[in-house]
Length: 299
Figure 1 (cartoon, rainbow, N blue to C red):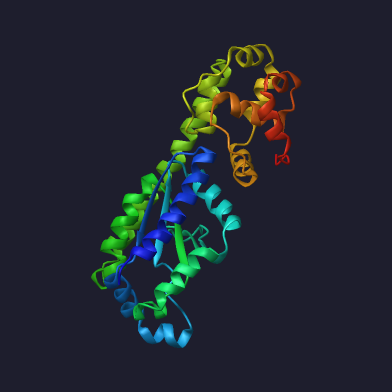
Figure 2 (cartoon, one colour; figure 1 turned 180 degrees about the vertical axis):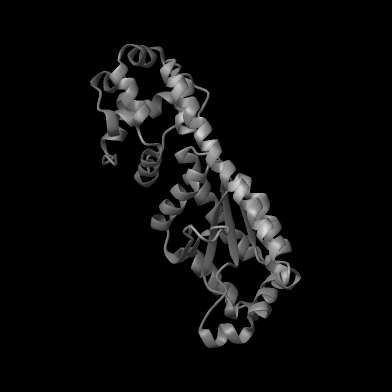
C-alpha cells in the first residue's frame, strides 16, 4: 500500500494542530506517523480478523499523532481543547485510583474532515487492506519527561506481553519508574510556581510572567510604561499574578485569538479578560483592543 494519500492527510492534520499550538504559545513537540502495510496487518492479526468482522470494529489509528508538552498541566489543557474542536469518535482519559498505580492514557480518536474523508474513500477503492480501516486518526497527549518511558513500554512490553508472564515484580518496577517521572512533572510545576512568586515579590515582572505562565515568549521586552504601572500599583500586579494560567490559556485556545506571544500582549489579554484596569487598557494598542473586544470573558 502506498502511503502518499495518508501522508497528505497526516500533513493536513499536523499543520492544523501546529497552528493552534503556536497560537496558544505553549512549549511542545509533535510526532506523527502513518501505519505501514506490515504494521496494519500485524495489528489486525494480533486482534484477530474475526474480531473486526464480528464486532463491527475497524482500525482507528491508520494515522497517529502525539503531542508532548513540557508541563503536565498542558496535557489536560490540550486534551480538553481538542475534545471540543474536533469530531470525536472515542476518548481515553484514565483517572488515577488510590489503590492501583498505572500509566494514565489521555488519547482521542477523531474523525477525518470531509475533504480528508474523500481522499480516504478514494484510497479504499485501490487497496483491499483498507477494508478494515476507519476514517479516523488518534491523538496522544504526553509530557516530554514520560515520552521515553512510553516508547520503551510500547516496544518492549505492550508488543511482547508473553515475555512478562511470571515477572510480576519487574512489571511493577517498570510502572514504578513511570511514577517517578510523573512525580518529576509535578515537582517541575511546583518549582516554577515558587520562582514566579519570588519574582513577583521582587517586582521582576518579566521573570514573574515567564515563570507563572511558562510560555514560549517572543524576545520583545515588557514596555517601560507597563513596568511602571506594575511597580506603583500593587493591587494591579497582585491581580495579574493571581490570574489562573489554566483558565487563561484554555480561554485563549477556544477564542481563536491569534496574536504574538509577548509579555505586553499577555498583560493586555489578562487585563481585558480578568483585571479590567483602565490604565493598562489605555496602553493597549487600538488594533489589539478591537480584537480583544470580540472575545467573551472566560475568567
